[in-house]
Length: 166
Image (cartoon, rainbow, N blue to C red; front, side, top):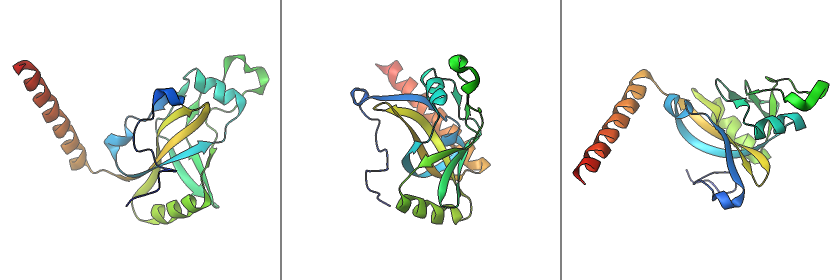
């Protein structure tokens, strides 16, 4: 299903465009089949942005959910900023994602289907603004995970064999 390029990341943007990855959710591609990706802004406080610039964030066990027509990100741990004194943020608070209304309606219909969920793949800066690559995903079964591991090992063995022949 082809989507417009306004909300979908199809390739890694050029680093000259102000693109800097903060953190990737490496387990996401192992645990889920990625069906579609969306780029969303994220509503943050100032001390959270400073912590993100320092790389003090974890995407382990995080997910997104739709509540009353808005998309929220849960279980993202952003460490408190050391120099923020008493104006610091709560590390595990839910954070609102900024998407177009049509995208939210499309996601609402998709997430209503059995087994589909929203998970963040990565947090990054794009021209100084924090963005989230959000994926519509379906959970993998155990045999799918084993196949992923077997494919990865086979690819690694082929690459090793090709390098040894050179």
